[in-house]
Structure formats: structure tokens, C-alpha cells
Amino acid sequence: MKQIIFSTLIFMAATSIKAQSNDYSDNKSGGFKKENVFVGGSISLGFGSGSFGVGANPEIGYSVAQWLDAGIAANINYNSQRLYNYGSSGYYNAGKASIFNYGAGVFARVYPLPFLFIQAQPEINWISISQKDNYGNKIKQTVNAPSLIGALGYSQRVITQGSYFFMIGLDLINDKNSPYNDGYGHAMPIVRGGFDIYLRPSGKQKRSAPEL
Figure 1 (cartoon, rainbow, N blue to C red):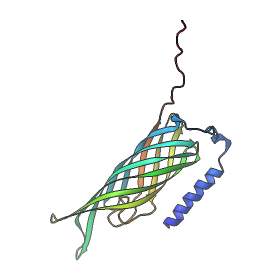
Figure 2 (cartoon, rainbow, N blue to C red):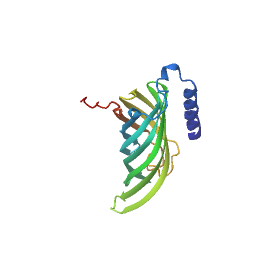
Figure 3 (cartoon, rainbow, N blue to C red):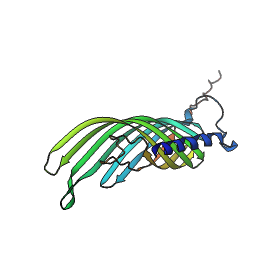
Figure 4 (cartoon, rainbow, N blue to C red):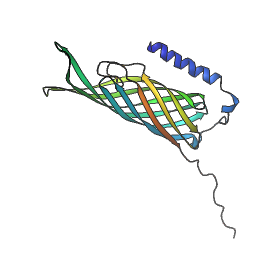
């Protein structure tokens, strides 16, 4: 199923690149443009059965064209998960797991429409896991895990000025240690909202020297 979702995202991205109209051709001139660099990020929210997650995702990127943004991003996330066991009287609360992680990766956003984007974001994450049962016993471990966030989003974006966006995604790899799944290995929806601000263009005009 994950392979089908990922293949669909790739197909949609390739199709959108091929199908761009002349309305998206105002950024054709070559060369690096400082005003196409943006900084910003988002906050994230995840939820599932007995689980909760929140995080921050700073990013820096470059608008290659009207239909494509690319850049690098970091992430800091916290997740908590209630643990349950099954006994003679049914399921009962067996403790809590807390997960703190940080990581980094790259991202690409393809805009098949001016307000709609498809995002792919591979990451590597370092995770600290702490589990505590009802008797006060604690277990701690540190692991790492790859992730690949595939997302669909809405954006209002004006290159050289700014943008804000909202997106919903999933970790398509869903490694057992992924910070984007719950304590039972189920992928949680990743909900993010944020904004980006473009840098100001470099000043090209110099004050002329006064005439003598």
C-alpha cells in the first residue's frame, strides 16, 4: 500500500511538471536570486489511539520556479503514548511511553496548481524513548530511524514576498522506530501548518560620488 501511495505521488509530480502552462513561466531567467530564498517552518500535530504528538519544523528553501520549491528542514518532536495490556477483565492501562526526537532532511514541493502542492520529505531521525509502567519501573533507549513524509497541502504563496501553508501527510516508510507512529507501530497522520518569508533582494544601486 505504501509503495502504491509513493508511486502515485511521483507520478503526480512528474505529470504536473510536464503540464505546466505559460502562467508559471515568470521565473525562467537563470542565475541565483536572493529574493527566491525563504526561511520559516511549521508546527506539527499528530494524534491516534491514546497517543499525541507535537513538534516544530524550521526550514530554509529556494523557489526554483512557480511550480517547485526545494530546501532543507529540521525537526524537533515530542510524542506520548498510553500503553495497554489485556487481562481477565479486559484492557487496562499499563503505563506510558514518551518519545523525544530530532532530525533533519530535505524536501521538495511541487505545485500542480497555484494553491495545491505535493510534498516529499526524506529524513533521518534520532529518537530517545522512555517507558514507565504503573509500578514506577522505567526503561530508556536511544535509536535512529529513517522516514519519508508524503503530504498533500494547501498554500497561498507569492514568490519574493511570503507564503503560508497547511498540509496533511504520512510517513511512507513507517519504520518501527519512526517518531511518526504510535506505540503499536501504526502510522499517525501528520498535520502541519506554517509560513515562510522571502529574503529581500540584494541592493544593486550605489550612491554616486558627489561632483567636485
